[in-house]
Length: 330
Image 1 (cartoon, rainbow, N blue to C red):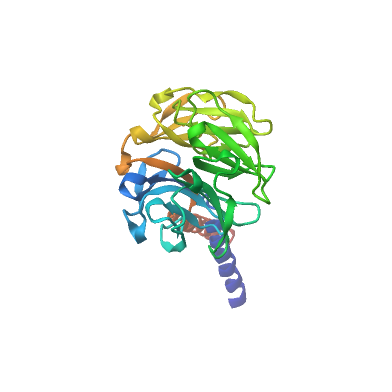
Image 2 (tube, one colour):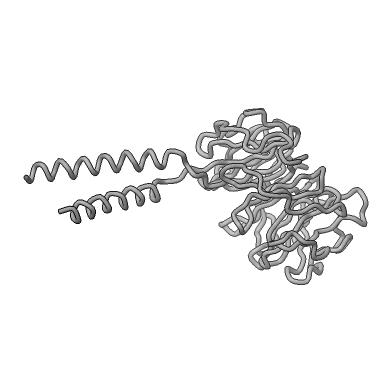
């Protein structure tokens, strides 16, 4: 009898554990706020402010200009005024370490992890001879080389960087309105993949699941769409100033497959239909939560505090139902 009771208890304990695992997890949107040196967290469904995820100047954070989730699952944040990359826990905001500090960089505008697992940083400078993309060991942060040498391919204002499906490196040359392409293994200049229209200024960009390239275009206050295979212009997916868009720096797709764009001059995050580009709403209204100069957006899966509560409630219900059935059968 005791053994049977033990088995019953073990069954419900296992059920409780499984319920805790399968409870749907929440997600959050993290936004860098460069003018007050912090990272803010918002509900990814409603856009409501949750908290200051990384407080002002925490652990030396000074000018967060970009961030990405690394292959190790940590949040990598650019500290542009200290030439550093800081790492944080993406669920709690806890500081991990200063992964890179390199005074040979000028203004780190963007970061990307390559197919080789290494970390690539774009360095923007007022001196033509110092514009480059540097490469670092993705495990240790040790400097490897200047993967794209200063001036290579006419690089003059490297901002957004990312690797395409072809495993080559693409660099947004902001002042010339170009996307330059470099060999993903050697770093040699391949070609000018995209030459924008007059007045274009290309900042960060996103290779999307639909096979297209979406480019934040602060020169036109729009988001330009190009074929990511041929480089051909398709359209302005988000029309100029749509929804009050003013100086977009980054455009990313959320878990809901809609497009989120930071409107730097209005201190807001605007949301657009992921299929049509139509304006939906000001997802994060102006200055919500103290947002001041949004530069980068990252969506992260968040470990919900409510999982345990939901699992316990379900456990109590199922256990009670079992007791009722046993009593009825007896």
